[in-house]
Image 1 (cartoon, rainbow, N blue to C red):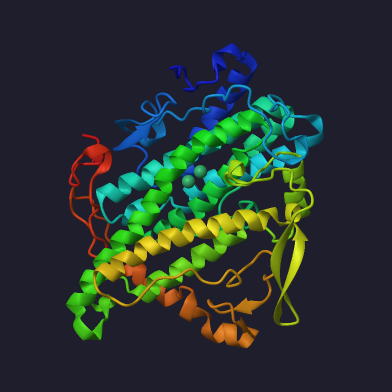
Image 2: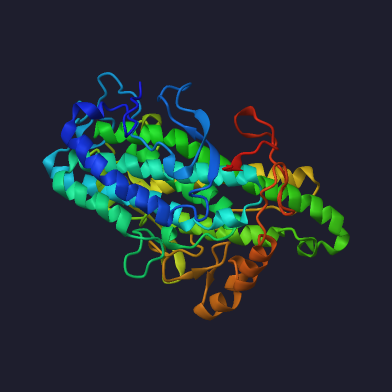
Length: 472
Ligand SMILES: [Fe+2]
Ligand SMILES: [Fe+2]
């Protein structure tokens, strides 16, 4: 059960006074960060109908109530331990999992936890102004649900840092509140988390593609030999699923509305004239966030990834579905780009672990795009959305520094400069989106013109429920 202390938890925090004090010391700094960098304009006078964990079992972790955002009860929840859990991959396969951090892997583990932890507050910062342009109260509530849970994910990583990394861990926890998304001097660690998200098309694409990178990273960390890390990330995955739901259904509802508007627009097909979002604009935002999220998986060939795997720190998504878990002498056929041409080479599988995870990720994204395309199909349109080639618009790995079109055809720098806004959002696109999102919609049951209502409300409530209310 979860205790009702200052910091809700199922890790018996009160049994470890030193840790409890350290976290209670960090808590006010976190709340200050949330007030300064969290949702702007919704801190003091609004109550939001959100989900809070009251226990980690399938029934208990989703408890709904109205809360003021700064009073949300951020806590520390680990999935239940698995009896006699054994290391599932790498050089220590079959040995008991670790309850403490082995000295020789301390730096690597700290780096993994800090990198994951840094993304959580970063996304809250990126999304802090979106509430003022929300398409409905339903969407506003979903935004805040995602935000409070990203805050909780920060708590999850800070708990690990404080518990297992001593003084260094405490310092890292402070720095997690000091770096800022997009800040020139102290940016967030990963590039996709420094990009601004100031319109709702970006937000939905972010939660579809970048939160899904979160899912692949959390899946690989949930395989970790460090049992507290595995249990923490396993619980985070249940929350992550909702974030991707918000993204996938958000885009689905935009597509639904775009189809209606395309029919209204007749053969001219110009849905912008009717205030909708045209398919090419949707495709450009898909291209942007998919390519940025591919980068988050790291370089194709990586000795770090090999070492994380060998040491049992970070496994593959669904490690138990693979036949072989040591992976010492198997190879991965990887496409390289040399002298302007693709060349396939065999790479030691351990060195290709980032690419293996990226393969899983691309497959998961592709399935989502198939679901989106069904909407276009059902409305009788021949347009389709598609994932761009993996080489397109990459900033990390072997394709960084080269240019490709969405089909993977190489381009010169001049060609790229001339044509990039056919594939990526332009300033004009951003201005158009802001123009149709200028006015927030706070009336229950009403939706902005560019997006269809959802099929159903939250927690079986009607769509016109007052998901966010102003305090009287
Ligand atoms: Fe998260
Ligand atoms: Fe997330």
